[in-house]
Length: 401
Image 1 (spheres, helix red, strand yellow):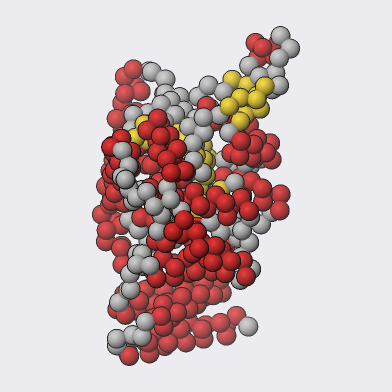
Image 2 (cartoon, one colour; image 1 turned 90 degrees about the vertical axis):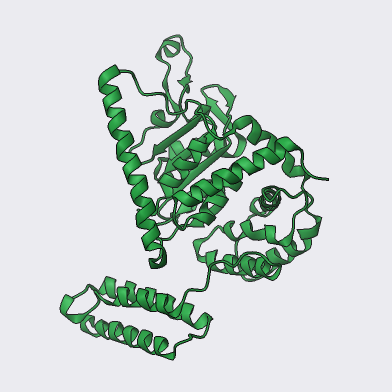
């Protein structure tokens, strides 16, 4: 029996959103799929990576396609709780009641984006902890239900701070976002310029309108018009329980067992909730029954960044064994060699590179060497030239001894 027409329409609208974002953001297809899963599952997702990798832009773009009250903010060490949750209601305070005015702020939002999410103060993060897990906000003596669907966060790295472990664990999904490789550079520039022209065009029009009308900007959490309504998204979420998981439970258990044997740390909560991700992957394929290829989201439930590669490789092996998409296409020897030459070019004695840049370059060259070894090179000269570049860069370390 197939899903009803309303369900299929919602799934296909989400697929339309996925394709649009895939076209807008070069090399971010996996990130788009993960964020799509997050809002269907009503889970929280974290994008990690260096600055300039379009993490914030991607999440903001997704929010534009979801008809939801949204809130976004860049956290810093100096961000005050009132900037996130709302200011104190002084009128009620004079009457002896402590209450925050949350209208238009995070507690009333359905889709939330926080950039540099771990930079918030302990007062902010502790409040978020309850809100993320229970969807409740303690406003003075009262506890208010929060309509939060998903909190999507971005950060350069996960802090190595035991005090942040509980907060970090609320983000079921994580993805390391890397800079787009040289193979997509042409498309990156083409698409990126399109983004940039739209951005400054909209900024100019907004400034002209503000000068002409003097009207205040809309509240950050105002409901926006998008492709998919919150109500339709909610109905889709409820259908996760109707997806048959029996065909994948054996593979799921064996995969988790192997990861735990290898020392990967996964909390009970993450393991249980991972089944929801599998169900969502099947649902978004318009299937009532999960298959082993739907295990792909498990590659992103790691907790410790040191476990990322182990988890991704184990999950990808299972997915590919059952006919799923390969993790990435096989790059040609020429493409790998072009990257190696680009890395080695500035690392020459006459340019006097720093020790840090030499070590960083050697790490990148080692990654290229591993990539080349995964598939024997067609041209034997490729391996020889890569080895020569590595040797030349490695020789630079002698000057720092």
